View 1 (cartoon, helix red, strand yellow):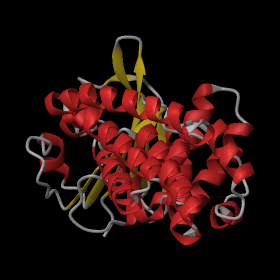
View 2 (cartoon, rainbow, N blue to C red):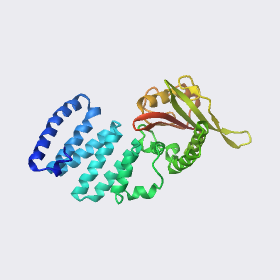
View 3 (cartoon, rainbow, N blue to C red):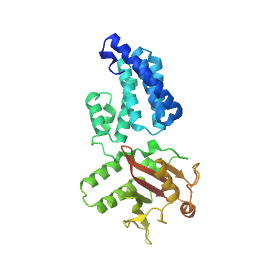
View 4 (tube, rainbow, N blue to C red):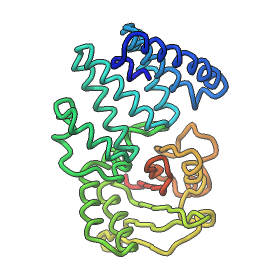
Length: 310
């Protein structure tokens, strides 16, 4: 209704605004009881109300608040919508530079959510504002972008790490090329984990996937230091139950599975209680990264990377 206000006469506009106000009363009550789920929605409507009534400064504040709340509570799709609406607001105001920043963030959020139709639509409608992105991305969006974005979306970290810094565009391009040439699942998984290992600087890469009602360690790829000082990359493809596998930090991986948060730990130091279990105390990895693989809100798997190299 707020979007339609500019297309109707004043009497109809007042009816729309009245209905929106009534709905906001309900939304405000929901937000009071469940702020994680509803506060960002409530504030986004406040931003749109302020835009319609001409209060630009208030609209600008509420757009930003809604965006930050949506991101903080993992509503990536609504962070995308809020960024897009903010971009339109600034374009109407004549502030193209501000609109460019919000639109690019909207694009990244839609991409992380897996909404390719939306990223395609934004590319067609706003090629000028998205020019920096389009110049860097000459390949089609792939859900594997999740892996490339883990350094940007990490929740817990103590310092920078080579693992997260190295998971970049090169890794994704190699993975995409490999996937296009693979039809056997084991071969695909083996190639993908090797590519991630090569490009991350890690010593071990583990892929955990759901299988019906259980979670299984689907592949463990590691660098084998041979006696003649040469190195060899090996992959174990024998499926193991996550809950019984002794070759991974199960407490950390289960934490990521339950919270869907990316975790980076350097030198076994973290402020997250209970994730430093027997495996990490025994092996003392220099740095680890554990991230969920999420597409359109669904947890598709977990990636664990470990670095013990000095």
